[in-house]
Length: 151
Image (cartoon, rainbow, N blue to C red):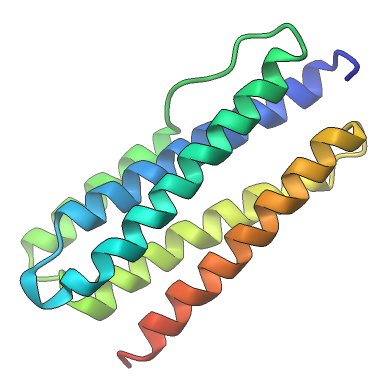
């Protein structure tokens, strides 16, 4: 893989948003009320999927002789804080939980679309991102279907 600052920047951005996604699903899973416990396995799987994405993305950064990001985005941290505030005011019903999860899925879908719009990506990076994007699109649709089943 050729060394490209832009590629490393894109990969590090995707690492951060995958960290946000994993932390968001971990938080949602931990905060589930008993009547929504059936969502726990779904949320844990999606968190695990993002952690696997991070490992793959970090490997791609490492191949560029760079150090991968390890943190989260500011917006992701703010989003989780907003969920805490909303839940404290009664916004923790199933539909609200799934709507917030879908909002997070919308953000990661956009991040992958933007990343893949870059022409500087090498073929192995593009291939990895396309696979991750496909999996995220499937997950987004599953979350949306769960949310819509509650409407």
